[in-house]
Image 1: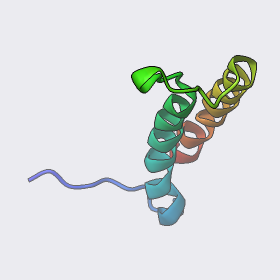
Image 2: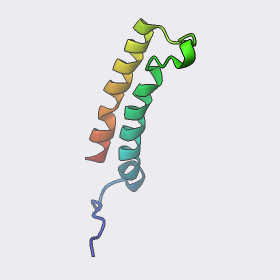
Image 3: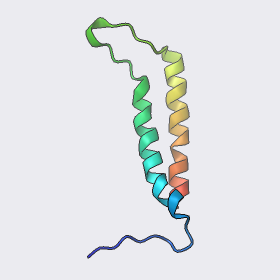
Length: 68
């Protein structure tokens, strides 16, 4: 059987939260995607949407750092 390997001195809460945080921030970037269903009005400005995507992608690095 395979066993889960967790470093002994690691903070287990942060160690298990890191991949969840990375995935959540990766999916959160799709929030600003301009989806136009039935020609509805888009609520997100394109310049603001680009700024949000860049901010979320830069925060995704913290999950990788916390898991190591």
